[in-house]
Image (tube, rainbow, N blue to C red; front, side, top):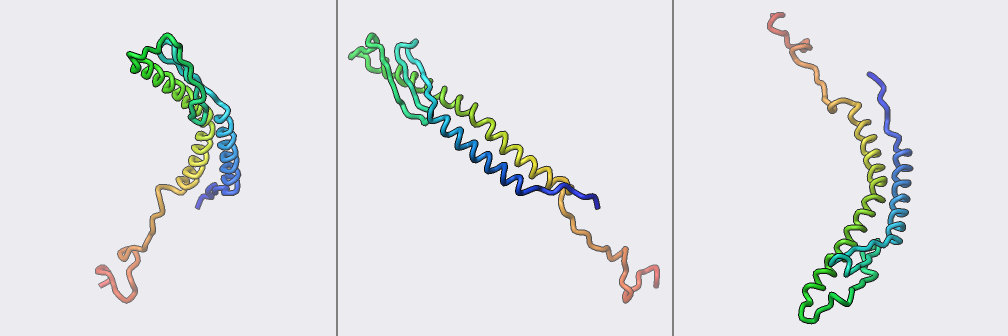
Length: 141
């Protein structure tokens, strides 16, 4: 039987710990990130933290019309949405290397189990191939 590569679980555990440490670093990095979004062609500016909190909002006084609060509301929503989208893109950049590490570990585990073939198949002797001494086959009769 050919010798297979075995899974080095100690190495996998070390990699998992490194990945967990990297994830903690990413979370700390994201806490320091701030992203800006704009609405109304830049008349409204929203700043969102990497944690998703609105930390600043600037509204140009020229867009504040007491008779039309919906317009400024739409601009604010657009600015906040834009800032959240920018944070999400930054988070994706940071998380890509962490998720790539997970893929590598899963690939190594999958490779080691697939080396054995399509699966374990029990092999039982066929009664036709190995007749019992107490029961003669038709040819022996």
